[in-house]
Length: 505
Ligand code: NAI
Ligand code: MG
Image 1 (spheres, rainbow, N blue to C red):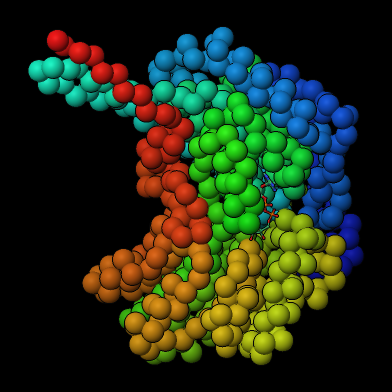
Image 2: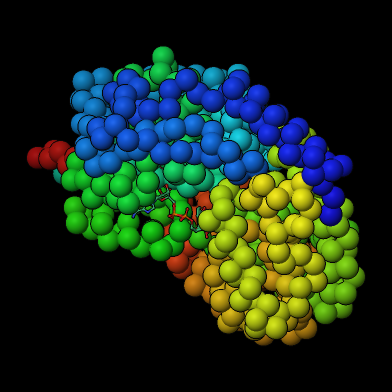
């Protein structure tokens, strides 16, 4: 592993300076709540700090929203729905969505830098996030005109099945892909004709606030509202609000369960995109170099902070030694360092809490006799000591029921299992509470399809990973969630069906 800085001194001066300068250029002017088209302070007047995980320096003070603010935002959203937005037809909404997409594209560099500062992800990956955020709006702009309802007629009746927006929806998003998750939520909600109250994660509120500034002139006041704050203070009131007709949540399974319970109070519709512990299955015919690249990206992309990360590797015995050796070599060649630099492969995790959480799993794995093929700690490079870095890690030899194998670590940690009997391997691959995604690597088309069907998960990649194309539904089986994003199904989740039955007698 190498870091970019030649000495700790360079990192101690150069990196903070680069981050400070970039922050001066891109931190949004408004870091308050965005309600009814206005940037306003929280009801309590309180703020919280969002930090830069590369330097552990403060980036900005952000309004600390609570129930009173959520109530104001929901009211503003209904007002916008009743007075203006419900009068926009699908063509009007399409134009708005396309304009948002163009605006995001026009600010790609700035938004990517902001994302890298607030989250720690490498700038190359942040840039991909921003581009795909714009694509979300374009995709839903495309399908919204097809959303035309159905009719069923016979001799005695003329039946129309139409869809209506919910009116006002609540959307709670995580910190791993801040703007992308905002887009996955906002684009279908607006396409379907809803107004929304969005709660960004407290670790990474800045890109959603910048987006609010950018779309202020495009979207009528109150159609999009952003309430920043903590989960229990600003998230929970949104899930319990009687006038919020649908809640969409992405985050941990534990909080997802809580959201579901709270939504039950008002029989509020929900969709949940939760955690994962996805298997990657390697057959003996693979090209080792290609497989190594795919596996490495599956687990180390975004520092392992991906719900769909391929975090359990099932490698066939015949190729295991070669493949694991190549994986370790690949890790040794990775550049870990300042995520603002193009050459960085792995940046810091989002927060010190996340580092501690990952290290706890690594300690538990060590105690249980796990063999660390590489990594296992914070990097000992002094140049990285200020940031939330964790080494890319491969662990072999854990029992499959160990906590580090069963639970989502959400860090750059891959657990390895060798197999020779397909049935036994598949039983283990499915022996987790999660079922978000999976990967199969082989050129044997029959084996590939068999494994893809056998893995109990909502999304399977054959010979790729992380490729999430709008149009292909994404979502979980088992405890990984309810509902689908990225597709026409998503539009359905933001609408309610109405049947109009006209008698012809
Ligand atoms: P979290 O589930 O607490 O946070 C996600 C979002 O939910 C944030 O906006 C948070 O403010 C909000 N939230 C928290 N408590 C809430 C409540 N009671 N009601 C409504 N909203 C609430 O996740 P956290 O604590 O940041 O991370 C813990 C673990 O969760 C991670 O280590 C990872 O394993 C998993 N996670 C999974 C994600 C995914 O994409 N599936 C994303 C983020 C975290
Ligand atoms: Mg931050």
